[in-house]
Image (cartoon, rainbow, N blue to C red; front, side, top):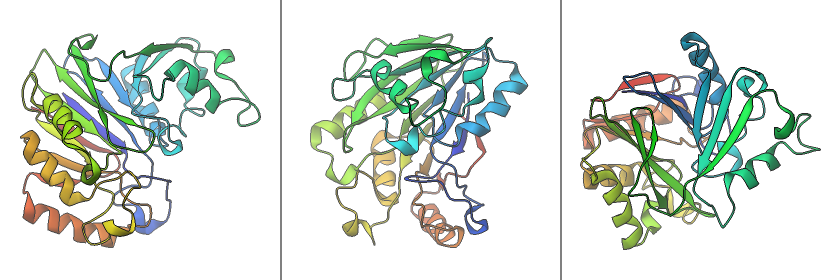
Amino acid sequence: MKVTIFGTRGTSPVTRPEFAKYGGETTSALVEGDGGDKIALDAGTGIRMLETRLEKTEASSLLILMTHYHLDHVMGLPSFQHLYDANFTITIAAPRRNTYTAEEVVPRIMEQPFWPRQIGNVQATVKFLTLEGETSKRPLRRGALEIRWCPLHHPGGCSAYRIDDTSSGAAVVFATDVEWGLSNPAEKEAFRRLCAEPAFPGLLIFDGQFSAKNYSDFRGWGHSTWEDAVEAARGARARRLIVTHHDPESDDQLLDGVAAELGSMMPEAELARGGMEVQVT
């Protein structure tokens, strides 16, 4: 299984040169199974980089799992070029969020007067899938890939996803936009179960927008510290940790310092970088 992280930034994209090392695009990632099956995670501005990958593989369809609908996680969707390809099929899936389904929410992003083309008149075939229940014991299947999910502590709600490649046994858990410090015991236990069943993951991608030094200024904003990410990874017994959702004010110099501290605390951990590819075993 290969995971490519195209968008690493939280809240808003950044473009200045001093942010280039860790990337300025907002959240989007691609999981590719050994059998060629592909699943995207979120549609932040990083989804633009995903377009090139799809073109190279001549893919004709894509499943997009939405963690939630805050703007930094969906702002790349209206300009996603495969929406305007008549030979392409896009399926957008998510659990209900505050009773709303993806089919009810996503078209609103492209409504007038915000976008010239609406979801109902793009060239691609667009489908919606509601993932019923807060936690799935019966996974959604996409070829050889199995998808499970659970809720996270975040204003308005958010979902973590686990993707298993049944052909290789590799597994990744993706948990952006979670405030671990305010998660109650039941929320933490649900996340640990997601990580433990059917086996501990080879890779955990986890929110670490803040640090223990500045978290008090942002308590309640819905995000974790990188130290929280280490705690969650150890509790989940993940072999490898990638910390993502970097603050838009955190430049490369600041993140280099975080990366050094993170590596000293957990050698198997690193910060996400735009375009980084990870082979998951």
